[in-house]
Amino acid sequence: MPDLLTRRERALRWFGPTTGRVRLVCFHYAGGTASMFRDWPERLPEDVSLVAVQLPGRDTRLDEQPHDRMGPLVAELVDVLSPVLDTPFAFYGHSMGARVSLFLAHALRALGGPDPLSLFVASSAAPALMTRVRGWDESDDGLVQYLRDLGGTPPIVFERPDLLELFLPALRADLTVVATAGAPPRPALTVPLHVFSGADDVEASAERMAAWSEETSGPFTHEVVKGGHFFTPEGTTHVLNRIREGLATPGPPPRSGG
Image 1 (tube, helix red, strand yellow):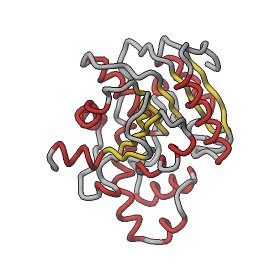
Image 2: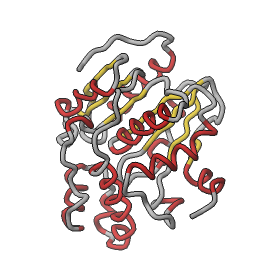
Image 3: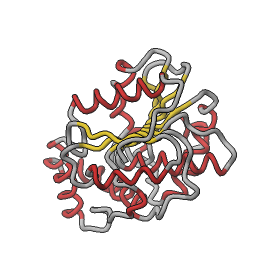
Image 4: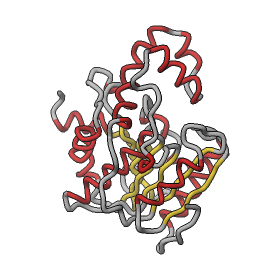
């Protein structure tokens, strides 16, 4: 296991400015990488710095064992992120990243640490529903079919057995994290929570995401955007606009869309 400093350098990818009025910490989907957020700083205010988490078992951390349980994953994130949470911050999580951001917010609260200004989550069925997670306990063929059904995976991955061999272990581990995480801690958070579901998403439909309202006693919004599990460019623009507004608004919005 790399020492903490090396692990922090590998785990955190800075895109755009490293300092700002507020920090947006982003968490990728199962099997994904931090690079999904590479272009976001160009569409965010200059006073928002973006740092994306890179989980082990992929890309620059390919030589590290991926986590397959939420507890150790969150414990690592507390270690590597604590030094950069000295500025007001918000979380954005996509799919698996939504669950990770929720459990991390609870862990920070339990340790007496700071709360995020807001949680922005997308493409993840509400944790309270305990919806069965596909793929993690299936054969490799079943896992590949799951990927095809979700969309968003470059076709070349399916055409190259060598790429699949590198890709599937981290994906399976990520899905196992979600499948075995259990119910979210209680009491619920108190921070503003903004939820986005893709209009054509079957795994995380609007109906399955509505119960995210149970994860906070604070302000809650839920919007349906264009796309499936992975949003269209128009859908992503809508999400980024809402993040811009949420980080710029001094007062909390009302609860809606639950």
